[in-house]
Length: 145
Image (cartoon, rainbow, N blue to C red; front, side, top):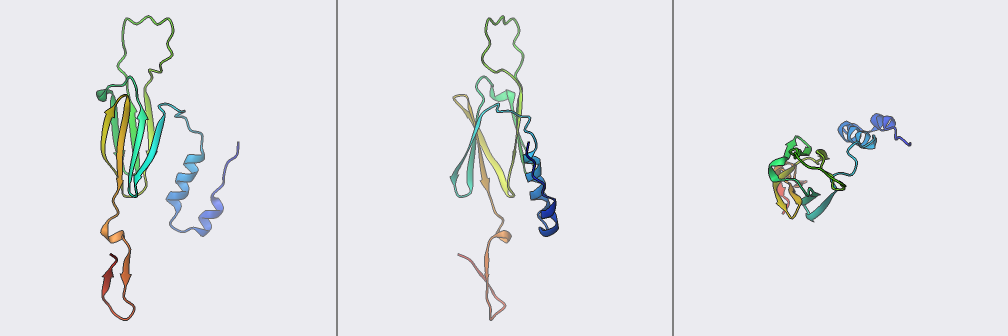
């Protein structure tokens, strides 16, 4: 196994501690495996969609939570009784999948369709964080249009 040591970067990158911690956390072993499979697509410049294959789960068995910059999707199946499988090839297990979101990204909606869970995300950059022009020979700020 190869690990990356970000310690030298801490000396030269001031204020990037959170970013470096996220990179270190992502290099550790992923215990989630590949279940359930998912896609992440960029629909527009600031709009994204996560699509998860959750066949067999009802809407009330899924839970979507956003905590700060983390999106957590959980699925808990209700146990079915009186089943005597000869062969069971369909995964019917509970799951928890976490996605690290960038700053100012929020969930704007979710919908189930044909066994796929679509989660729509949008990045809304506050007006104070958007670029602005500064006049050189004056004190007036010009808005970037």
